[in-house]
Amino acid sequence: MIMTSIKEQAAISRLLSFLQDWDNAGKVSRSHILNSFIETNQGKTAPELEQEFSQGASLFLVRLTTWLRLTYMTGSCLEKLLRAIGIFLSSVNSNRYLIEFLEVGGVLTLLEILGLEKIKEEDKKESIKLLQVIANSGRKYKELICENYGVRSIAECLAKSKSEETQEEAQVLLDSLVHGNPKYQNQVYKGLIALLPSASPKAQQLSLQTLRTAQVSPGCMLLWFSFKHGKLTIAFYSCAPCRHEN
Image 1 (cartoon, helix red, strand yellow):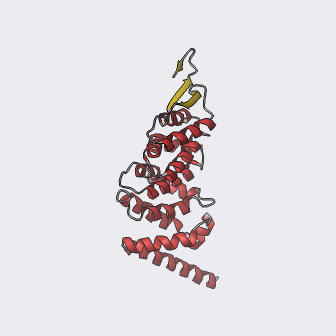
Image 2 (cartoon, one colour):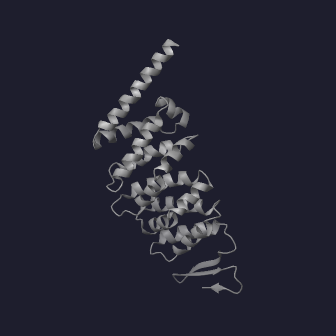
Image 3 (cartoon, one colour):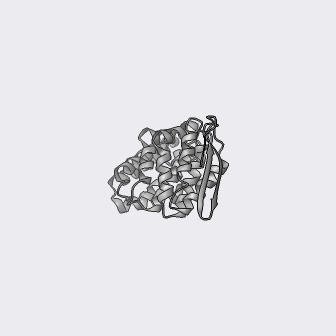
């Protein structure tokens, strides 16, 4: 018992020292801390993270989310910061971390990142990946993204992005949101249709790809679309009788 108590005290002391180092660190030092954290903890489960942080992993997560909210508009270490948060959110049995992240407005912050012109494409891609993790956690989380005008933010990012990798990640996210999300399914579907006249050929391709696999309610059913002589033709049918548009 005494040896266990000594080990526990030593572990807690290391945790407090680590947190103090983070609190006192500048941007460069925090970047190094993030690098080390990502390298050491990639792929760990939630119990493993708790063991690593002496049952105090949430104390580090709250520091990461606080720094994200304070600095995301400047893009400071943003990619590393998002990847570090992703280790928590994507870990097995991570529901506690997910709730903690959402309670401080994490979804809205991630969506706002997508609309910032000065943010690098790599940062936006990491933000989309975190939104994928959240969406894949269940229906209520998909609804939360949609309630925060997520469909519009994601679709605009897909249309405007200069990076095909970022566009592809956005398409994966929209595909997730259009399935298993009956409350907002038609909203996502209409967002995909709005991408079809996009000036970006990649955005057109990805939206068509998603529409082909989407299972939508009868109230918004796409029947046919094609390219002919370089022009996109769309025909869709509403469940209201005799309504057909080209």
